[in-house]
Length: 397
Image (tube, rainbow, N blue to C red):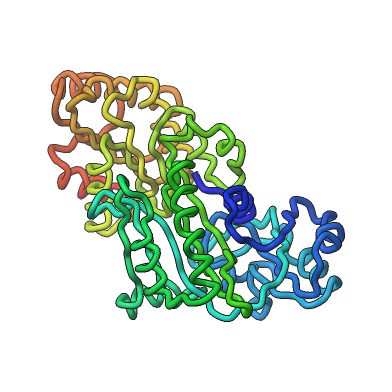
């Protein structure tokens, strides 16, 4: 689960992390009051969407020459004008896709005297099974290019969970970020605090870009992106309250009601698979044969007939779907349960596009019998390669 920048900063501020003063704007008529609440004369107007690249993004309605989704202003009047221009517009960034996201929330923040921009994030380093700091002296809007062109400038410091952030860890991070003086003193408190917040709130990502060294030498968190482990949200009802469903795909929201792992994509072949690895392989082989998956959907190892029916309905609700591939390898999940769910869903919602079904594993013969005797117009497949070729051929006519 993702939250907005202003929510992330409020959370970090509770831990004592240095952030600038700011005011969230949830309606355009709050612009003047928000400006009056900050000292100025420098104000930063920030679009609040669940996507990166806001500063370089462009608003669909404002033309290519308009400023991006993060704007520095130098007077109360200029700040109000930018708020009114940005609110409700559609921001397209390198992470939103071509459709962009509507800006329904803004964050007005006090300006900062920036000396240097750094990069700092915490994430789970799966190579060692530990939380790690990832840091670089090259913070700011071009961090993706830094990672691509000069990966030697990005450094990873793994944290032993039994020890937490040690003094040696802090010194290593400070060395990589070239922190001295006041910034070095701030770091002794900041980095252990960030780690504590990450662990206590069950975060999966805490990204600060940029972490700035100000002209007076002190550190400040200038931006914050936070994602939480969805499997741990039951422990954090206060975090669940921060969820902004307007930032999520309607189909993903519906899938979450049934504990389905669903991610909407931009292709035309809907996928219903059991197991994340098999789902990834299914998407890969669809691309191999020249088409694009419309979704990632893992019904899980113990899905019921009701969950399978819900999954099928979610796939068919996507107008971009021109064909469906059901790929099930039955271990814990029985093929007959999948078959019953598919048949029930098709009878309920109808079938307007080609459907290829590949079943293998537990009760596979019974599953095939249910499909074959259903009267549905289903294309049978023997294996994954055969299934992918058949659905791509059917979609292409």
